Image 1: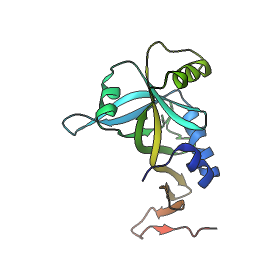
Image 2: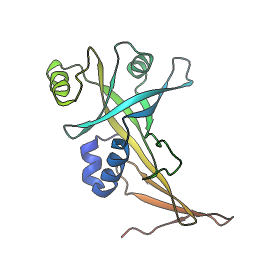
Image 3: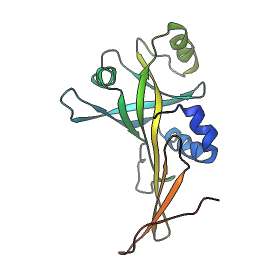
Image 4: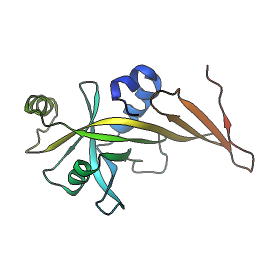
Length: 169
């Protein structure tokens, strides 16, 4: 099951804002795609939030674009930043990339970005999972959202005790 960014934002507005803000802290992120032989490929990539969606733009016939055309599964991790603070936590989005070939949408997208690209592939991110991991005091906190399910928050202490789940408000 996948959903678009608008549905994610409607389901979990605060979490969606945290994730979007984390991606917007830096321009370049790490995109994982699936190679023809099934092994992972990681590449630098930009993530844009426009028209209520999460978008991935790529150079024509780049390996990552060809990977996504063949197998749309992806994961993209927000750039952790230049230091070790991990401000805002570690954020990752997984899903399926849907190539957009409609010329009107591509022109509209081009008009919205600061530096209009040359020829490019444009993919809309349909989400299957959104994860944020951060440290709160002495605990590792993992927030997980999947379409059709509420946001889960798991906490793990720095010992052998099992993780515990925060109750939903």
